[in-house]
Length: 373
Image 1: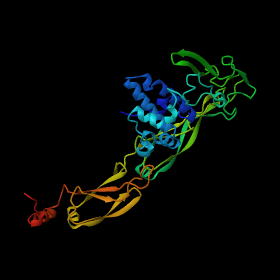
Image 2: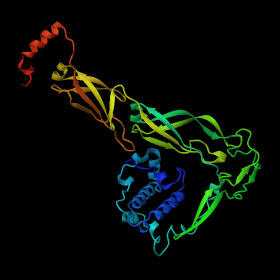
Image 3: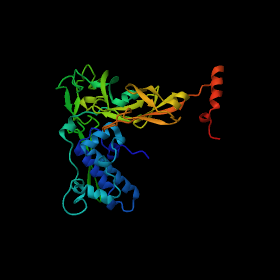
Image 4: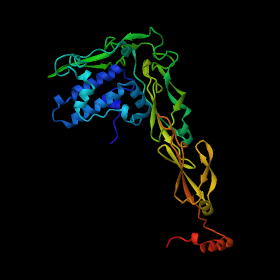
């Protein structure tokens, strides 16, 4: 079963700050905590799932790998901690759970107290821009060594006339009458666990606290223009068909100065004329004549970066694999490369001349040319 997206699990955006990720995890941990859901296996699984997401997204190195390569970028070992039970989670995040259900204090203490307002930085931003998804086709040669591509895409860019504000001038704003300039709307509710304060961006002003009174003449108040842009994509060596990477902040610009979304680049591996891929190895089918297989020879074979000579030992059987070390694909995020595996095939001609038939019949009479009956 495919793993869910970690950002989706915690209910945060890809641009979420460390503090937002911590708060989102805290909220889920409180909701699905085993003490409040005794005997509920589904809640326990969600509790462990949230812990797994938090461990990755709260670590800058792991988060960076996940943003670029998804789940496949976390290759176990030091990059990922598998939680077998809830006690394992309590041990790993003892600083978070300490005091949450007993004495002392922890980051959970303000959860039932109503929460805190968003920062002034968040209030000043407009609507976030949407993500874009593109498919990048790569040859095996490009995958083997890594490459850089320049791609033209249609997307919304920040309006240069108003610098993304959507307003004709800095004075062309008025205070939002719905949120009174705070940029947020609060709803208070109570339960047996305490008081909850739900804070949402104001829909009337998109969380900015201001309404445009005189729109920009270039973008008509949107703060962005639809345009064509050229982006540079640095593809690391070793990616596979179906892998993806995230280019942060290069997606559609947000309305009214909101942060830009991301570009999700999906890699597609093109079929190769000579090679088939087996992990980081490449396989090449070599066809040689029967005499060459018996007597041995030296042949020239294609590789991912040119041509190379390969020695065929006398008596080589059809179906044998010959290894050309580190002539394959560089490993993703690690040193070294795969091999080129040359599969030997004995060429059997379908049509032969009369002279060739005569010679083959003579060969059949020789002891070494007879098969085992």
